[in-house]
Image 1: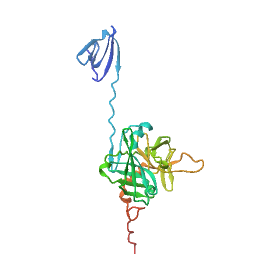
Image 2: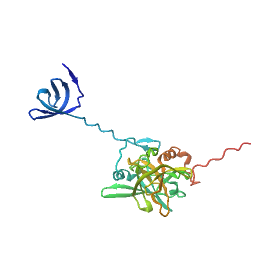
Image 3: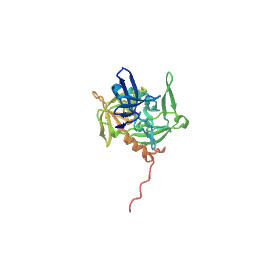
Image 4: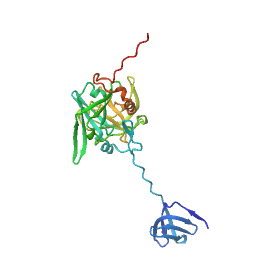
Length: 300
């Protein structure tokens, strides 16, 4: 007699000739009968009594939840699920901040639980008194939280990137942060969105598509997108639909009849800046550059 073992997880619907139905796990399939697990008992059902069998595919195992992984001072999140812009805004908006100085304002975003904030160098260039404004979700609305003790960790004028740190360790641990994505994986036409404070209009969201992944300008390259970037967006994040930062919003092309030409510093350039931040460490004696080194001795 032929006996064929089958996976215990295979479930089937068995319709009997008398009209009854059984839904059970199939333990064994024989030429003359099916051996079914009904939960409370094991039943050997003759094939002569069966009118129809419908096999049901096992339910897919839920994929493990993505977890943030530390890489140096920032985080990545492999396997992060894609969402609509609307749902993404709900999960990343708390990590986007407003940067206020005596001469103006810009945007930024938090990258870890130590309170490190990324923005553009031109947003804080020449400034020593900086305020970081955080928007936290509360029941019934949002709560603004201002941090006035902010340190400049590193900056680079050529790259136009700066690292700030909220100097309040206890409060910083409770703040949301966002993962950094792979800007090299962007493709033309891919949907992206930005959050920031254009013209001081805090928590503004704009969306567009990637026009081109790498556009050269003055020896640097940028992500060109149709996302609306305006004064005040500078230093804010450009997100993909996984809610990962793929760029740092930097500038726009302006002029009569010019529309949809926004430029962002690629996230992979930001990663290099973060990993080599010691080279750009802030020196209060020279606020527009990093450490100053003496030139090497000249050859005689």
